[in-house]
Length: 200
Image (cartoon, rainbow, N blue to C red; front, side, top):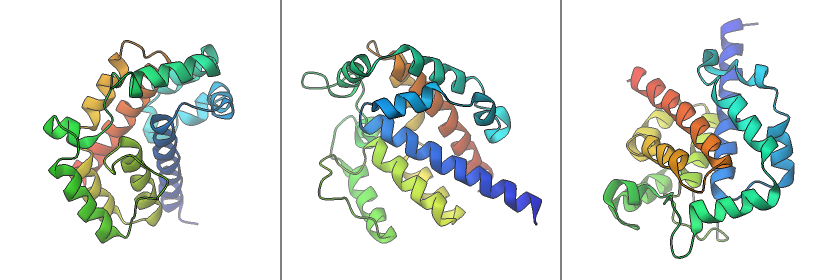
């Protein structure tokens, strides 16, 4: 057995899981089963990811899941992401890059998604530059195993704004549970950004 290859496989599996988890939490309020999973998270195991560089984020997320309720986190999600007319945080790349929705960054993204063979599901109403959609694409690219595709997609469509989004999420007035989500996302995506910079 190739020990180093095995470690790399485990690293990628964790990356896929975290991308998908963050995508789910940013797309909708967590269900009871998700809150229970996070509340019982094995923090010691989670901290092995990326040499414990995310060690401070896992206990924070676990505690936040333990302290919240299904009703309160649903209300929190509504205030943070949806609001009346607009939520406190706008989870779209075009907004962060241009100050408006449905701008050129979305058009470039759609071109790249088409080349990669990805199509928006008919049931999805949000534009493709929603943070959840981008995180889901990254999860699929990691699963595909092509590091160059991962690097290109991340650098084109996430690197310029994902950290600002996470900072805004952590600072949102209505955020309690989502402050912890924002911290985990910030630490993870910073690691990913560094990863792809170093591989250039």
